Length: 328
Image 1 (cartoon, rainbow, N blue to C red):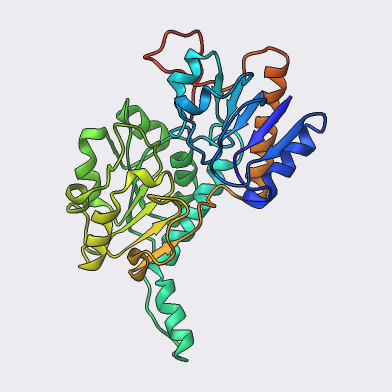
Image 2 (image 1 turned 45 degrees about the vertical axis):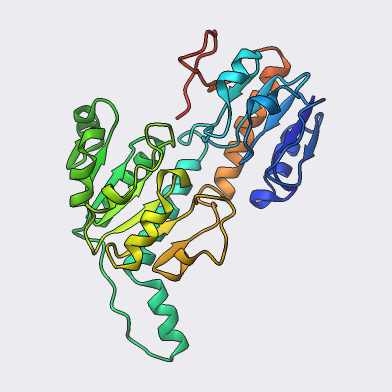
């Protein structure tokens, strides 16, 4: 089995080395970046952040599996893969430690923004003690857009901070409210109501045709001037220009971003001049999560090598296929 890792050799803290140690009998190659020119001769593609188009898939003369090392498959043309009898699978956030690690970074961003970490840096540089004054989390309202693995991991942790928790769930919001112990849960049609109430608006939902740029000029207009936006999911959920405009006129208090409209983002992007706490797409990059993901990826590679169906295979409802499974 020849396996192509669409990233640099040491990306995400040496994740490729973890998979190699799980599967020493197989041959791995790193592409050196997030672009791949050909899939010829490879049995498995680990796409990371590579765009896997129908044209690229046509170069795969023996490709059996596209196995994401995480949950995000928005860059993969799943329908084309299925038409070519190529399995597509991911690693759900709640089985590997991924969701827990992302939730921890989300809380770091909440604390960093509410305690004004940029103001702390300025005070240290100017030898000022006792300032800036921050905001406590207790009593604040946290609005979670998406109640999958990451949303649930945030809920478990945030209850200890004595915050009010509300959410948006695509289906059965009342059942989610009761099972998760939230103060309020609405459907997608209730997004503006959630935004108006939230002191922290946290995005933890997949990026789909329905959710792309869900945070835009209109939805941002519902935010409180004192509220913070935190994106832990995918950059495509946020309209970059609308966010910059809001920050520039203090329409919102700040933003925490682990994902961006383009990756890597331009470090000189004007948006970073404002109150933005940014991290380089590393929310899930912890020792625990990487080990858990590597084991799940390795298991699916073994299954395909044995001509077995991989776990967590994706389904495209519009395609005629026997594939089934789930992504989150």
